[in-house]
Structure formats: C-alpha cells, structure tokens
Length: 400
Ligand SMILES: Cc1ncc(COP(=O)(O)O)c(C=O)c1O
Image (cartoon, rainbow, N blue to C red; front, side, top):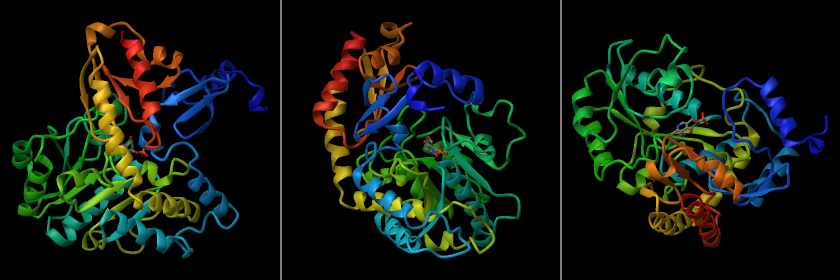
C-alpha cells in the first residue's frame, strides 16, 4: 500500500475500519508541514492555529530540531536506563538550568509525568512529612486536565473521561480552580500536594485570578504541602514565559513538562523540581524503557537550547498581545482568555448556533479546534504577524 496514491477518503475509511475509535478527527488527512503551515493529501495548505495542543511550539519540522534528530538517528536511539548515554546528563542539567530547578526525572508522555509526580508526592508525604502509610491526599482543581491514565481520570471532573473506567484510584480531593478558600478548607495534615495547571488548558484556557497562585504557594509553605504545577501545556514559552508560573514570580516544588519538550518530533516529558523532593525516588522505585532515551534527549537538548535564547518566549509575549487585541476586536467574540500566543476565544452562542465553525475555518484554510463554545487558538510560536492577520481575518469572515 503506497500512501501517496491513496485519497483522503481511503485514509479515513482505513482509520474507521482498523483504528479504535478514541477520537473523532477532523476530516483532513495531513501529510506534511513546515513552520506554521500544514498540508493535506489533497494538496491543500492550512495555517495551523491548533499547534498540536502546544506540542508544536517550535513549528512543524524546525530545522534545528530535525537536524538534531537526524544526527542522533545515525548514532544511537535507545540505551534504557540500564546504561548511561552521552546526551542524558547534559539534557538533565540543561533542562534544570532552563527551568531553575534542581533535579529531573524523564519520561515520555505528559500523563506519565503527572502520574509520576503523584507518586513522588505520595512517597515524599510518607517518608518526609510523616503522613501515615496509605493516607496521603492530593488536592486537584475542578475542570482539570492532566491526561488519561487510570489514576489521572480518577480525579477528572469530566464524566466522559471517567465513564466505564472505574474502580478509581483513591486519595484525591477536588476543589474549584481559583478558589483559595476552598483549597484552605480542603487541606489536612495528610495532604501531600496541591496539583494544578498554572493556566488551565483543556478547560478553555483559564488564567486563575491574579494573586491566586501566590496564595497557593503561601498555603503550601504554611502547611508543609508540595505545590505541583502541571505545565505540560502552558509551559515552555506557550504563555510567554519559560514557565507559566513565572508570571506570578513564584516557584512550584515540582513541575510536569511535556509536549514541545520533544520539539513536536518525539515524545519527551519530565518531572523537574526540588532535589530533596525528587530525592525520595531511589533505584528500582520507578522506571520507563524509553524514558530519557538518546533520541529524546538529543531532540530535547535542542528544544532547551532554542528556549534558552528567550526568542520563543518573547515572540509569544509580543505576538500574543497582538493576537489577543485582534481577536478582541471581532464581532461575535464575547471574551478572549489566555496569555501569550494562546487564546480561548469565547463565541457569541446565538451568533454561532448551529454553525460548523471549525469546518468553515478549514474550508478557508485555517485549522483550529473548537470546544464547548470556544475556539482554542494556539499557533506555533514561529507564526508571523502577517500570518496572525491572515488567521484572524479568516475567523472574522466565518463569524460575520
Ligand atoms: C496540562 C496537561 N497535562 C497533561 C496532559 C497529558 O499529556 P499527554 O497527552 O502527552 O499524556 C495534557 C494534554 O493535553 C495537558 O494539557
């Protein structure tokens, strides 16, 4: 079967027949991309305002990342943690330095990093804080999205993410996001950690009230509780700073990172944070065959090098301010949320009722995701001002 001679319809029919129905993909069959552009098998070109859920912050096939991957493919791709390899130590050091943290634990997907952070927080609670064995609690926020493992869906508030997947992992309490009093009321001597997205992504790009994260930090300090920031989506320049928490000038004890840490090329995720907290992990406690593999580390090092220039953070801040101002001008938009090149665009429900907004955008050459009445705009951070103008004009056209 040569994919080049197949039509989009053939590809979609194969997926329908052979793939588990874990998603309802938008009906385009993508074949290649560069920068902020992506092409389908029918020869159409789209401006990418979706950004791979923030996994393609550097754009599609960034030349430096592709070069790093190609060079490493000719050297070594897998060692496992049974052996050292020559990108592992450097990547851990460079990632820790970029994020201002002390230790790094590498894994593959974002969900895996979050699951690992929960394990670390629990073990820290038993070994360091003195919580009775089996009693550790983790407090999370309503409308969270941290991934899809059985433990993570155990504390999801999205019914469809949970239905049919119980029994669930105990030990989690859910409080409303942004409500410091609810958090204060939920905390007990057995609380190991508060786990939050610094900006909630899948919930609709919700920035917490100003000062909230700093209050959470104080509460954690006062109660000897860990603050775990899930920055899998909002981190690594998407929100205009290396870490989204940097906006509040505070530090979490642990961060989870993923998505564009692998440059949009390979899955790379990590828990990074305090040495004394990550120090509860001892040999044999935890592991992953592919976690920290040579290809992942070579690409991850290049991603970190790109971020260390500050260029992507600056682009996200400057072009993000421009994107937000342009989106705010549009008729049919009731609110624009978010930070940096990341916008949750709430649509006037009466105006768009019954309209197939994302289909209409794609027909005009723009790929973007719509969820529960809002558009999620997250172009790769290499997008230009002219491309933002083009994308916004397509959205305006569809909303008019
Ligand atoms: C905040 C956050 N955490 C974790 C995840 C899970 O990452 P992955 O899909 O790589 O498992 C996501 C994915 O969207 C996310 O947005």
